[in-house]
Image 1 (tube, one colour):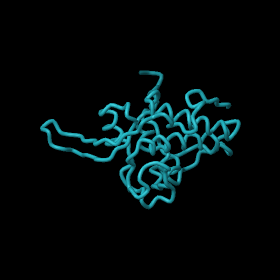
Image 2: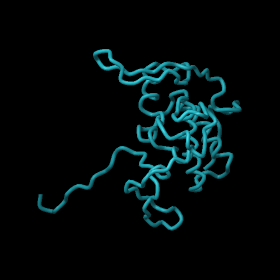
Image 3: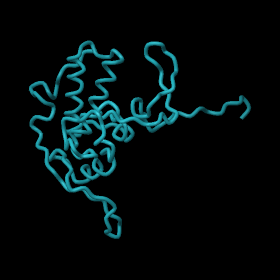
Image 4: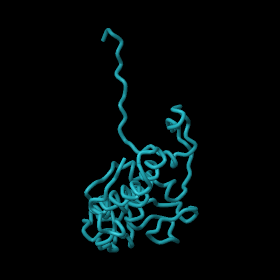
Length: 189
C-alpha cells in the first residue's frame, strides 16, 4: 500500500505547528470531592479541558514505564506514567505502523513512516480517534516493552495461517470492545 502525505506534506515532524501546553487535570465527584488529579498533563492547546481530562484520567498509562526497556521520545523519561499526549499518539501510531510493516501492508518503509506521521497529526488535531481499548492497550509492548500474562488471547499467525496462543497480552492486545456473538439456531425455535 502506498501512503502519500496529505496533512504532514510540508512538515518535518507531525507535531510541527501545534502548540502543546501543560494543564492540570482533575476529576471530581458530584459533591466536589476530588477523585483523581494530575498537575502536569501536556496536550495540544486547541484541546478542551474535557478532552484533556479524558486522556489523562482514562488513557494515559499509569505505571510501569520506569522499568520499561524502551522509551518514548516525548514526555518525562524518568516518569513511571505517560503525561504527554504525544506519548500516546506515538505509542498507537507507531504500533500500527509497525504492525503494518510486519504484515506487509506497506510497499516501502517510507509508506509506513508517512502513515505514522499522518495518524499522529490526525490524533493531535482530533480528526480521528480509535475506540477505548486502542487508547488503553495498543502499543504498550511496542513503545515500552511492557509484558503481561496472555489472558487467553489468541491470534492467527500471518505466515502459517495457524491459530496460536499469545504469550503476552500487550504484544498482541485485545484492542476492540465489541464481539459478534453467535445466534442460537436449532431449526425449531
